[in-house]
Image (cartoon, rainbow, N blue to C red):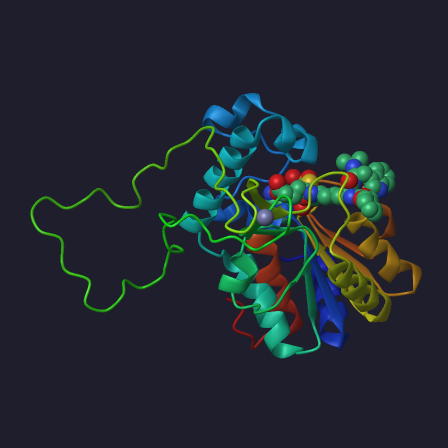
Length: 281
Ligand code: BJW
Ligand code: ZN
């Protein structure tokens, strides 16, 4: 990818000292994780994610909602970080004051080399009790993340080799486990519509956006609030905003540069434009 927009965005990144990278579901699309507003696959095609991701849906049918999250958790476990995740890690390696703020509930930033992103919408991997909030263990049969080496001493399989990859998980409604403390159903540790964002994460995000000298927004439709206001905070205080998205969003108007394309291609090209010697992942 080349062009005057990329060169301008590269200049802005090279001049930055305290950038913020703000990410949404498009960041993980090339890892095979469907975006929130993409059509779901399989059994889940007939459900609207906006209607499943609510406290009311969990109260009405906990097995349906837990089963949806379990299928997504397993999908993320099978996924690998893409070159976009590694480019974000390369930015943070080059500029250690970089703050990565994500709306994503996957763990691909961490696995891609960003150890502590600010998580606005929680995580698929932090279930908790729906009544007393006690943290709950992950399902014991959850496979390890793709790319994790087999533990030492794992015996070689005998006979016919297994087909590659994990066996297809059970896909469908699944009764959530009961809390070990109070017996109430365990829920996913994510932020649903109508719920408050974790205040420490939101405060950290607003503070970073207010103090940044460049905000790079990647792969978000910018439709969900208050997260969608993070780039606006930076722009209002004078920081340039660079957007990476294949399609226009409501943020286009406040952006200094709009880079139309997939994150997995645009972000490595942006890192190379900023620092031609960089290992952009
Ligand atoms: C690519 C790509 C590639 C594709 N490369 N790009 C103000 C105005 C209007 C409404 C509200 C408002 N303030 C609050 C609201 C209500 C509501 C809201 O925003 N509703 C709107 C939908 C209208 N917000 C809330 O309810 C929030 N809570 C709240 O306000 O509480 C108030 C309160 C205060 C005090 C006490 C109590 C309450 C909570 C919002 C929580 C959102 N949670 C979810 C679900 C998380 C769990 C789960 O995943 O199941 O978070 S919703 C969903 O949307 C998920 C995402 O993080 C979030 C953002 O989506 P994102 O990341 O932008 O994904 P997509 O799919 O929308 O877009 C993908 C983009 O990628 C697209 O643009 C593609 O083009 C692009 N793309 N391929 C780069 N390869
Ligand atoms: Zn409990």
